[in-house]
Image: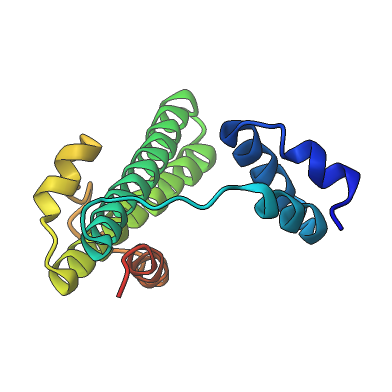
Length: 165
């Protein structure tokens, strides 16, 4: 027997059901999720190969994550650079902000290295991902600056997880 709430869900559009599903996913409400899914109709579709679509979606997800991280870190780096100019004259604060800028720059280098590694491993065009992100490969602001190795490893894992096996 179907309960009253489930019957009401049957009157909603698929767009409304998707929005409710997302809401209940975020609060881990398994009961409501089951109710909603029980009224979503099954359909048969003709579409491109699922492996192809999954792979292409995964590549777009890699590009999206790379783009978001690149520009987030880039903005933090610029913020630290501006702060170093604001703090000019106070050598201790100026050095702290320059150190922060280098830290953000080392993360950018790490992100670039992680992208390069994942692209090589999965046969993806690094250039195409950068083009979509509107980002160029970062050159270190100082020759001695190196990529943040732990962040690089973390990003390799995150980027790789976005691609189906």
